[in-house]
Length: 217
Image (cartoon, rainbow, N blue to C red; front, side, top):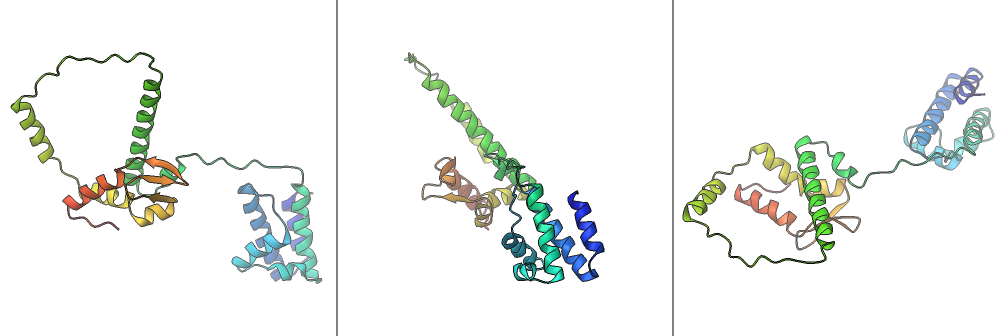
């Protein structure tokens, strides 16, 4: 008998209140399975059910008509998936960035991650070089006109309010807490001990925010 059919049969044999509780337990078991968990024990399902106002562990264990029906439903789930292991979904390394709700902050984070990957790939390429050739020729002199053009370009760089807000959010405690990030005294950002952004990342953003008198969240 399919699980939905089992639920329907038990509900038809129960009072309205017990039928509602059976449906709650059934939905919680479904959520467990969709999460990749096959733990349909009375202790686990009772705890999860109690959190949403459904029957708790004691109510399920009770030797009453309703308690027997609760146990029958959970046993059906346990028997159905006893030998059907479901692989857990593998979370991508950079999934935390894709989960950012603010699209501008998400774009900034993904762009920085992509740039970091490129630099890492270049470093690997340089490690493969067996013979290093050094060009001893003097570089062309930088003219005063070129320097002036660069300075003018830097002076004309402006950030929009939304861009500054995204930068501020990227290094905020709220963002760090949400994705398990941490920073050290040198401005390096890490996740679970693995470096995500190199030394100076936080400091660079703080300089921009300071220049625009924007306080971190």
